[in-house]
Image (cartoon, rainbow, N blue to C red; front, side, top):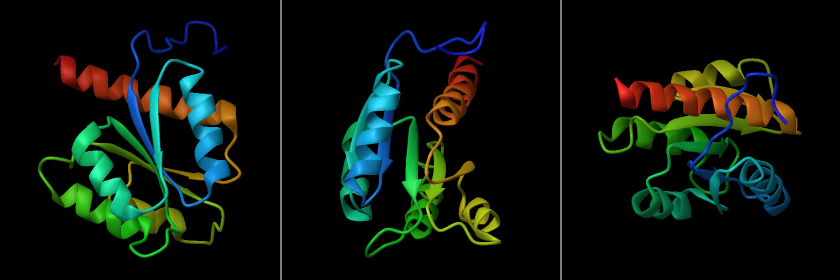
Length: 139
């Protein structure tokens, strides 16, 4: 349950979770599906690019430390492409170091969360970001 007056999604919002740790993907998926979102998960940047092209998600939870192409480089690529630049990208990392949040924002991420993810914070942050997407789309 959200805070009083909190508007949870009525229709599913499409979210992509990009994380090489399957437990993290499954947790995020369970939490976000539990409040009505359509959630898909992939383990790396290559699969993420294919998923973005086919799913057109409104929001991506992006692990920064991915094998191969890391999450910051993938974010840069998505934000540089006119077809994907408006996707909300929330960076996540288990190895938070000073300056990581700034690096994520400079790469184009719209927000930053450290792991382990607080499930209540995750629901709230995602809901707020998707509300902004819906408000922007309606104007």
